[in-house]
Image (cartoon, rainbow, N blue to C red):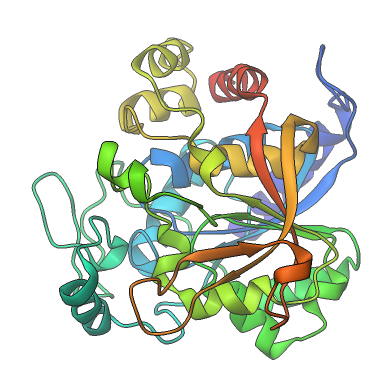
Length: 362
């Protein structure tokens, strides 16, 4: 029976985790961290899916759930890419919870109107126009195109991401690190339903909050310098940033500090394992390792070599700055519920890359 097989695999995974040393040679000791990851899993491959490599291959992390939110693609399609990856690497035991299909307020029509006044957003995630080599379908949220990596046989949980997150945090008060590497719709909805959620979580780590990116959009890749996760659902970002978390860590600009270079992907691919073959086949060369770095820092904060603590919020007023992250010193903050945020400014990129490569080869 499938249920019996699933129980056997889950027990095997738990025993393997217990038998694994608590730290790798040359790595600092670090406590085991329970993680609920919420992400927008555009696939196959690329940064969204690849964020599961440190999550599932680092012995210091225990994944208690994965939420899926519309962002880079629609949630139904994202869920299928995620499930297929878990199937390929032999982790069908990991619980997957589909979440919000739409942002809280922002719509595709409103974004078109905004662009007419304030300039184009090059990458609009699920709302992106169809293009060669891509499967965007902005006007059909329920469509799941044929997956290059094949359709999964396993299914997601019948529980949605919002209630699963609330249940998981309440079951382990003070122990769960929430990692949000996509738009913050699921997290904001959870806070509105369960206002005690932030005080019960250990911390939240966000991939978003890019600052001072105007010149980077002019001189470099405009997609890579756009704060998509905040821009896609600004109201959700505001709700999350002003909630009473014990600790908020933001990886905005620094999440672009390492890229999927051809050399890195070739070294990984040469290992020939299921994960390595998947990365070799589907990694997007030159793309920053945004979500991989975010998950790695959530597991091992010692990767951070420089940070600043400031108040942060997102502009939700109509205008050119709608969706833009704003920061202040404490004494000049407007006092609308802003919280101290640990803004990561630098990470030990060499140590991150070495560990990520080793994890992806396993």
